[in-house]
Image (tube, rainbow, N blue to C red):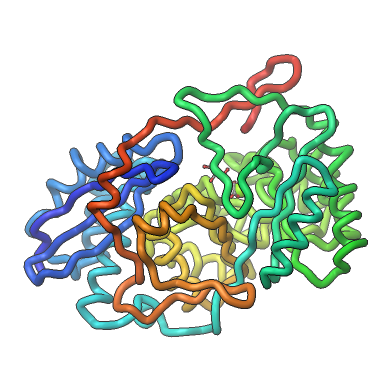
Amino acid sequence: MKITEARVIVTCPGRNFVTLKILTDQGLSGLGDATLNGRELAVAAYLTEHLIPCLIGRDAHQIEDIWQYLYRGAYWRRGPVTMSAIAAVDTALWDLKAKAAGMPLYQLLGGRSRNGVMVYGHANGRDIAETADEVQRYLEMGYLAVRAQTGIPGMASTYGVSGDKMFYEPADASLPTENLWSTEKYLAHVPKLFEVLRERFGHGPHLLHDVHHRLTPIEAARLGKALEPHHLFWLEDATPAENQANFRLIRQHTVTPLAVGEVFNTLWDCKLLVEEQLIDYIRTTVVHAGGITHLRRIADFAALHNVRMGCHGATDLSPVCMGASLHLNTAIPNFGVQEYMRHTAETDAVFPHDYRFSNGRLHPGDTPGHGVDIDEQRAAQYPYQRAFLPVNRLEDGTLWNW
Ligand code: CS2
Ligand code: MG
């Protein structure tokens, strides 16, 4: 099955998405997500200028050889732009192979290991009362797991709180918005949120929280310890993880489960975290960590060390990524949870898909491939609109982690 053409489709149905479509001499085509929030055109250019010319004429069935060619052959390895571009090619090739076999992708990855993929939604509010009402709404929709993020008294904004409900889009301006942050105000308030949530909903629902890289290791240890009575499913991105050894300090002080990895793009970014069991869930994704081929390697490595997969699934990862992720998460043995921030109706119309939500789980369909398509005519109606993620400063002006 020869690759005859590949094209990059950039569309903005409410937010930017970058999609790679690979076409073959057998009339089949495959799709891969290449969306990197705030750096979309960098990945589009990497694909158009540096990868697509090398794909034409190759056998689309040679997924592993093409992955190695694009990774080792680049000389300049790793990084979010490079690995998102390779991911898009890889995902499209797996989509093609499954279509050629006439099977849903999960069948090529080992078959079904579970009935549905447990997901978590994103409850947020300006204050604890509004956040608790949002958690109630998710539970009434059948969610078994809910992430809770609340506004912090004395802070104009904080991560994860917005007017949007059901989805969350942080890339909010054509140049970075500047947010202000106070660790002290945050640490004083978040334990109260989970005390209220457990009093109201008991210890049945899985509750999660995303710190979003904003604490030092000892502050993260303090928060993890303070949250122990509330039995979180996980505390996410408690501290930046470039220095993976940071998590040794957190681990010494708390048994609150830890999740990291949505910004990682290869196994090397999390090797120490996984082999020393410094985390409980790894958040790497199909779109940012080299596609199905590499994410499967991360999942297998994690399985050897009692670490489960908790793939990132924010609104800025396209339905193509979600579809492919569901097929992998249906098959792997060490599945934990899949993040599921919904997409807008506009986005869903651009990306028709066969996955469905019911009883707290997402269920991939049995359409051959990963089950997600793109309506190119509709996509063309939404031209790219530059959008940056915010930056964060401490109250004294120090540039901090957003
Ligand atoms: C967040 C994301 O969903 C999450 O866990 O960390 O909303 C993240 O902020 C965005 O994907 C960044 O584009
Ligand atoms: Mg996160």
